[in-house]
Amino acid sequence: MAQMGANPDEYDDEYGEQDMGYEEPAEEEFVELDLERTLTWTGNAVIVQAGGEFRMPLQVPYPSVLAIQFEVDGGNDIEFSLTFKDDNENESSVLVEPVRVSDREGQLDIDTTGLCEIIWSNAHAWLSTKTLSYQLQLAPKLDVRWRKRHLAALTAATDFRMLAAVEMADKVDEDMRGMKSRTAELQQAVSTSKEKTAQAQSKYERYSGHVRRLEEEVAAAKAHADRAADELATAHRNEAQAERSLIGLQQIRLLDAGVTADVLQTLEQIASPLQQIFEAYSGCLYAPEKDEEDEEEEEEGGKPKGIDRAELIHFLQDFELIGRGVPPAILCGVFAGCPPQLSLQEFKRCIARAALALAPASFDDEDGPSEGAQTAADPVDKLLWLLTLLAHRIKEIKLPVLELRRRVALLEAVNQLSQMLPPLEGEGEGEGGGDGESEGESEGEGEGEGEGA
Image 1 (cartoon, rainbow, N blue to C red):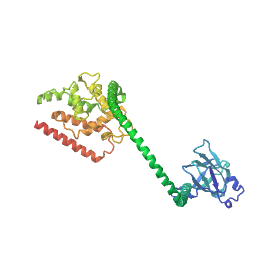
Image 2: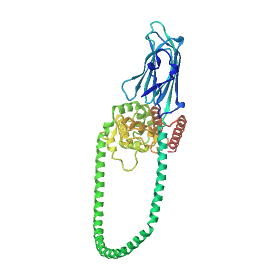
Image 3: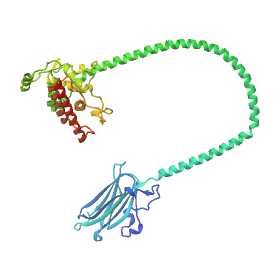
């Protein structure tokens, strides 16, 4: 696993080299060190109290050579030992047995990965402290085995090409020597082949008549098979369409189950802007425009009591969450269990259901607010997707049906909502200024249209 190597002349004290566990390094395939990635640890005047110890753990992430050099001030001795725990083993092994020395210099050859721990112990001293200075260097080894294998493969390929060329030349010489005998054999084969050709021609004409009759029968059978295949494909399409419709209906029934406690909590956190949106669209399709006195009375205390389903659908269409053609079947799940006239709480719940129904199941490849997501969306993510989409599309959409008062209230609500939501990825400070200008332009356009109306 690892070996410790050093110069034998440096260890002439009474303990000898054997006590440190040093051995002459054997010849290995790792012969080069990556000096650019060498790590160095240096410690000066490290105090080791009497009866204490100093441990230095080193993580070895790849095969390396560990160079160790230390000395104790004043020529005092200290107990030195070294352990190593292989990443593929459960227990540590002692590479250097505890030995009392005053200084040492050597290297440890580690051919695997793991945790190396160097221990300087002063447990044998009762009163005197020891001052230690050390320097450790961990140099990764470059694997040259791949280079050797690559060179051997190139040599083998070159030898193979040379051998193939020699064998081919021998084959050409052999063919040239047998050219005359081969010519006679071919002339005899041509004569025999003419006779066989005449016999084969007669047989071919006889069987060709049978084939033509069989082809006519096969063509008729193939026409019947094609019609049957068309009928089968139609049946498969109808079956798949019926299964998809059934799954869609089942999802409609289970849509309300996705309105979890976290979703309801999120709705409560943004209750104020949702109420403003509710008030902006409540009665926008059916109530006639009021004069200034009615508007003042409504501002003083009158609040809408409900919003019609058509008005909520109109809200979703304004923000291009659904089209204006045939309504999707999933809207049945959005309004399931709710009366035609929705209260504020029912409006919030329908908004949550619409988010669950219209948001993609995963945001991996989606454009827009969900760009950059890498995981499947949970119910809260889908709700945030819809709310963020409102904040983005308010800059581009037109609201010709809403009167000026409602448009201003809607812009204020969406602006407040965008401030409550977390910022989107890729949206910088510069874009924030552009958003303000877009909202100002939209509001100005709304006022101009209101005055023109």
